[in-house]
Image (cartoon, rainbow, N blue to C red):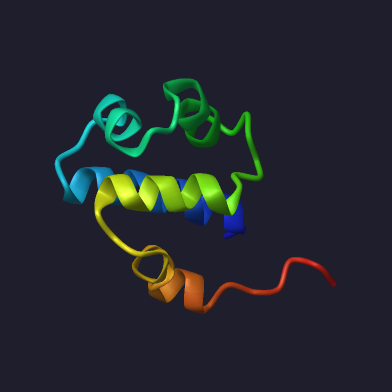
Length: 80
């Protein structure tokens, strides 16, 4: 799986875990709904770290917690 898909899946997983809709996440994180939808629906294939940090703030987790998964730990290098 590529990094983009892992980020998208992690956002969706955290929304489910925290019982949070995409709309609510957009409001509490300060990320516009259109930006969030662009990430989820693959229009934006490179969400910036600042955007991810804002989403983490909305989830009330750290960047470390966002990326601290087995999938991210086993992610292969994409540039060869």
